[in-house]
Image 1 (cartoon, helix red, strand yellow):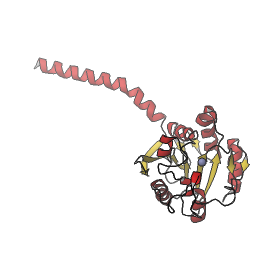
Image 2 (cartoon, rainbow, N blue to C red):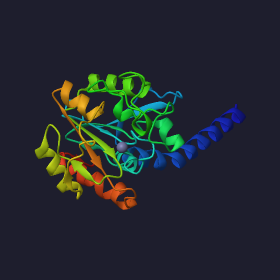
Image 3 (cartoon, rainbow, N blue to C red):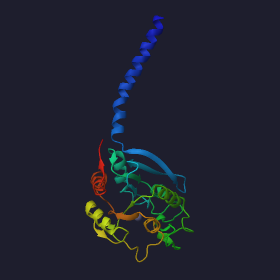
Image 4 (cartoon, rainbow, N blue to C red):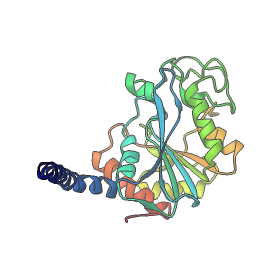
Length: 248
Ligand SMILES: [Zn+2]
C-alpha cells in the first residue's frame, strides 16, 4: 500500500513538473496568436492546401487580404503572417490568405503548376492569353481560382486587398477610389492606376468588383521591400486605416 502511494506521488510530481514546464510556452503562444479559425479553402494543382486564417471578430465588417497570388511575389505574405502571429484583432472580421498560389511559391514562378497566371483566369472579361499571362484553357479552369471564388462567395467581404509586387502603388482605378487613396496614404505608397495596358482580363479584383456589392483592390509593393516594413509597419498601418485595433 505504501509502495503504491509512493508511485502515485511520483507520478503526480512528474505531471506537475511537466505542467509547470509547458504552461508559460502555451500561454505565450496564445497571447500572440490572432487566429480564431483556420480554413483550408481548396487545393492547388499539386494538391497543396490553400489556407485562410480568420482573425478578428465574427459579425463585424468582413475584410479579406490575399498575398502570393503570383508565386514570385512573396514579400507581402510577411504582412499577413505578422497580422496572424500578432495580438487579437478587434473591430473587423478579417481573413488573410498568405499563400494564394502555393505551387507557384514552391517553384518561384508567377504562374501556377500548369503555367497559368491566376490573375487572368477569372470569369470576368476572360480572353485566351498565352505566355506570361496565360489565362488557362477556359474561365476558372484552375483549382486555385475555383477555391477562391467559392470562399469569396461564402464570406462576401466588403473589402478585398490583394497584395502584389513590384509595381509600387495602390490601384485607384477601382470601385472605391476614395478608400484606395486613403490606403495609399496609410501605406506610404503612391496612388496610381494599373490598367493592365488597356483592359484587365480575367482578374480577381475585376470579377469581384463586377459581381458583388463589396470592392476589391490591388496593392503593389516594390521588388524588395524592407523586412521591417512588411513585418511591423504595414500591419499597423492596415489595422489603423481599416478602423480596427489589436490587443488583448
Ligand atoms: Zn502580381
